[in-house]
Image (cartoon, rainbow over all chains, first blue to last red):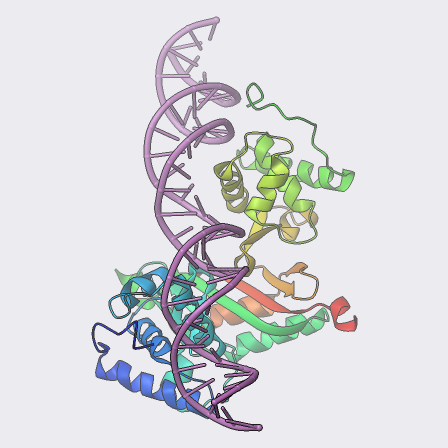
Length: 166
Length: 166
DNA sequence: TCGCCTTTAGTTATATTATAACGACTGAGA
DNA sequence: TCTCAGTCGTTATAATATAACTAAAGGCGA
């Protein structure tokens, strides 16, 4: 990749983000998946944002480092990161956020995909929780009607603690 | 509307759908909202489908009755129907289904928006449930972190009872 | 009935999000 | 070295959704 599409700059991330990217690389290594330069950069850009970012926002930023980046460049990286569980897609926003659980906790990498998202309509921030009551209620409701759940999306829109005061 | 965009046919719905449309009209009357011809037709087309339908599928069908229909025609009707709670949007599919609760039960119109959706990846059917355990778990998880929920999206993907057998 | 105002709809253009398709490069292993 | 799977560049296009402006329709009070 570097021959025809050399970056115009080294990657610009803060030490915190770099640490998360190192974790992500280590995580990928355990699964024999490859966190390539582009994928790493896209992940870094997502982690760098306090809010979910859209694919075309990512593309705009990515182009500062890879002049030739195009929509498929971004969507391929997103597909990979989603498959690894390193990011989540927020359906209501068509946007992407880093997976807090994969990268910030110390549980290792056996975690399920049972996250729920709280979307603040005041500030646009999204927080991820893993609430077992919700997961169990969902599993049990599905079982009641003979439905075999595979994956679930829970997105709660409202006001975060801070925005309720302002 | 009828002058320049006359329908090429009367509406084509089955007696069951017609009954639901009558309920919807009655419901709108109680709220001083107007279920116009276009809105009624769009609602009928949605109710007529066993699966969620996309806006452009609706548009294609709508054009059999209103030659001039364009994307805003459909999206305006959808916005209205969503606001009245007569349909739901399935976020994961960018598609729309009728609200079982508003139209098929006998509870009247005081119902909240606490539905959850089970999406079968086998047959594409979506069923709507209102499970209070899930609602309560969500409310309680939100409260724990000081978040004030306003609306929530719960979409569970998996296999329905029938598709588990095939 | 008339005029006024709000809601609804027609119409054109465009924004936003996502994927198809094909060829070329790369790196690992036979 | 050859081959194969995986990754990426590139172009084009599909699919979903909205902006902006005009016109018509319907309710309502004078």
